[in-house]
Structure formats: C-alpha cells, structure tokens
Image 1: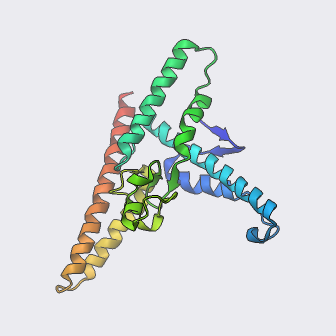
Image 2: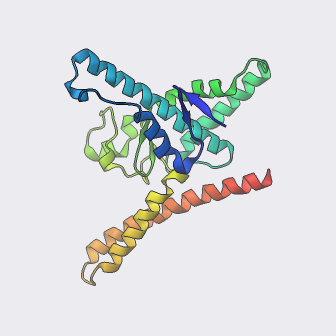
Image 3: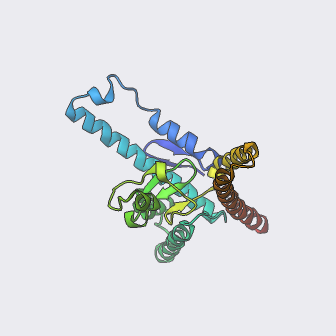
Length: 228
C-alpha cells in the first residue's frame, strides 16, 4: 500500500524508511544561491518549504509506524506505551466512523488527520524516534538544565531512558553496531582500566537490552502474521 502526501511516495518498509523518505524529501531542493544569502522574503519562503517537507516526512514516518502496529510490530523503548495508546485510540475512532458512515469514510485521510498533531512532535534521532510532546519530560533537557527549551538536544539523547523515545526495527542496525564496537573496546582494555571497563559495560548492557526489546516485538509481529 502507498500513501501519497505532498506529491511524493512514502515507503512502508521500516528498514529503508529513513534513507528513502529523507532523501526524496530534501533531494528536491536545488539552490540557485546559497540559502542564507537570499533576501529576507525568499529565505522565509525557503524555511516554510523546508518546514512543510519536514511535516510531510514526519506524518509519513508515523503512518509507517502505525501500519507496523496494525501488523503486530509494536514500538519499543520508554515511550512505547504512550504511542501504542495513541494508535489504540485511532483504531477506536476509525471503528466508530465506519459504523456511523461506512460509505463515506476514507481511512487513509482519517488516519492522516488523527496523527498529524503527534507527527509535529517527531524529531529523528540516530537510534530512535523522539516524540517531543512535553519538554518537562525530555531527559536531554533535564540533564542540560534547560527544561523550557523548545527542541530536544540530540547530542545528549539517552533514548533507553527518555520517556518520550521509541525504538523500531529500522533502528536495530545502529544499536547492533554500537554493541559490536563496545565489545571491541572492552576487549582492548588493560586490567587496570577498571573505571573505563565499568562505563563501557553499562553501555553494552544498554545496547543489548534495546536490541532484545526490538527483537521481541518484531518476533511477536511475525507470530501474529503467521496466526492470521
């Protein structure tokens, strides 16, 4: 199934989502002059276009995650429960609409409408999706001592502990690479480097836990598909 939003196609393949969606969206721009050298009005128009593309990209990603949910592939991570709750409410609303007016309900359009508000909170992390709903709950802002900031601090993200972060199958390669790299570093340490070893072992345990959670929900989705 394809959903066309703002004139480009969103792929429903989680493992290829971030590259294909992001690349197509921002590959449209050809700058005749450097963006920051444009006159004020033109620069404002450019920023508006970028914001529009980001919004369309985000709704496409969120729809992909919702379709995963429908196939039994749940999000994982600290923010998973809240996202699943949102999807459950969307399902309930769609069911209600189909009961009341089955001949006029366009499910795709209704899904876009119901998910658009949440999509505007999405920020793409290297190894997670950040749903920046409440700045007061953002771990990165608490760690930085800037709880009133209007954007998350990607450089301080600890998605394994942040209540607004989720992990998905498309993030697995990043976490697996982190696990393998950390193992190599631990193996290269001398016996006296106990402090560094302890720090890296915490990082390794975190990566392994995230991977186990991603694999668990993916396996549950496969089992559900086999049952159907």
